[in-house]
Image 1: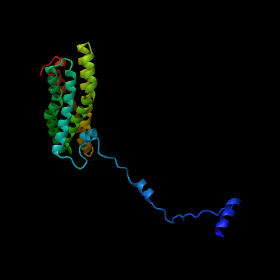
Image 2: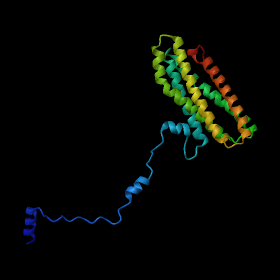
Image 3: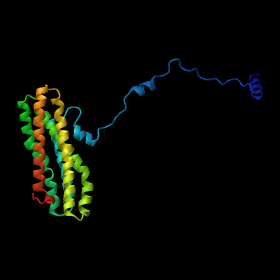
Image 4: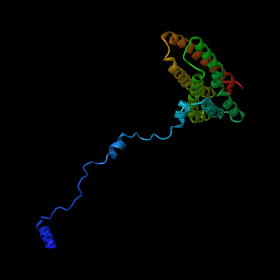
Length: 231
C-alpha cells in the first residue's frame, strides 16, 4: 500500500517531502573561532630580521651578526662597481666600500654614546650597539639592492666620470638611509627623556650626523679606485 501510494503521489505531483535531518539547535562555533584566530604570518623575512633583529630578545652576538651581514652586502656593491676595471680592482672596491660604515661605527658611535651619557640620556651600551647594527644593516641592504643595476651601468657606460657619479649617488643614497635608521633607533629611548635632555641630545645627534657624512665621504673618496683613490 505504501509503495502504491508513493507511485500515485509521484504521478499527481504530490510526492511527500523527503526526510531531512533536523538542524542542530546549537550550530558549531568553529567558523567564529576561525575568524577570531589571527592568521599565521609565518617566518619573518630576511630584511625584517636583519633590520629589527630577533623579536625574542637580541643578544650582542645577534647584533654583531647583523652588522657583519650589512658589511657583506656593502661589499657586493663594491664588487659591482669594480667590474668596470676588472681584475684586482674588483677586490679593492669590495674591501673599500664597507670601510665607511665600519669607521663610523668604530669611531663615531662610541664618542656619541659618551656625549649622550654626559647629558644623562637614557641610552645604554646595548641600545647603541643595536642602533649601529641597524644602521649598517640598512646601508648594506640598500647597497646590495643597487649592486646588480650598478654593475650593468658601470660596465656599459662609456664615460668614466659618469660611472663614478652614479657610483657616488648610490653610496649617498645608502648612507642617508643608514644614518636615518641609526638615528631612529636611538630616538626611541631618547623619547622618554626630559625636554632638556632631548634638546641636548638633538644637538649631539646633529653633530654625529655631520661627522658621519664627512668621515664616510673621506673614506670612500680616498680608498675607492673609481674615485681616483687607492686602498
